[in-house]
Amino acid sequence: MTKDKEKILVVDDDLSFSTTLSRSLQRRGYEVHTAHDVESATALCAQLSPDKAIIDLKLEARSGLHLIPILRERFPNIKMLMLTGYSSIATTVDAIKLGADNYLQKPASTTEILAALEGKTTNTAAEELSTPSLDRIEWEHIQRVLTENEGNISETARQLGMHRRTLQRKLQKRPVKK
Image 1 (spheres, rainbow, N blue to C red):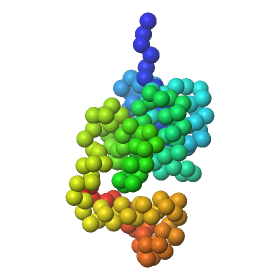
Image 2: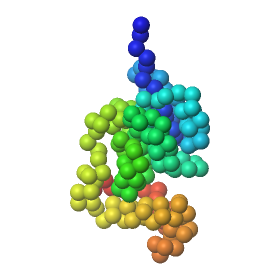
Image 3: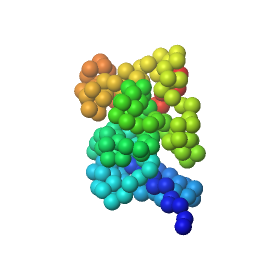
Image 4: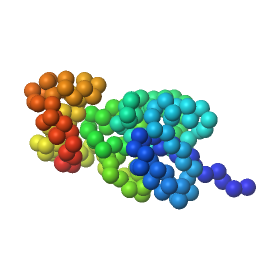
């Protein structure tokens, strides 16, 4: 009798990224299922029991944060990784509080993703907290205000006292790690 393959759920609205990651994981022997939003991921989980989940923070309609407690309640032993191109300490803390096992910033290789799922990564929020740069502090503040305004760019810009276009440019730049 052969051992069942570990099932990984990949939830990301970037079709190119999710396809590439899925193929890479399949080549490594995993059974991979993909969803592109919270609703389709929830429906997919009614049919399967994933061992691991890789969830993107910024999904088109709803944040990937909404999926974490759903999966944690339904599958208490699932290993969950929050993956995002918009890393902030605030969202890292939120993801961990909701039940994610780890958090990793894009771009990340399949090896880094699998290591993070197993808890073998050294990329932690605690490391990023040590002596952050002024750019990093500004990025964190913008992300916190943006989260408070549920992603509303215009309201966030008004509260931060900057032009909407300036805020959009700042959001497109990746913050310095430290």
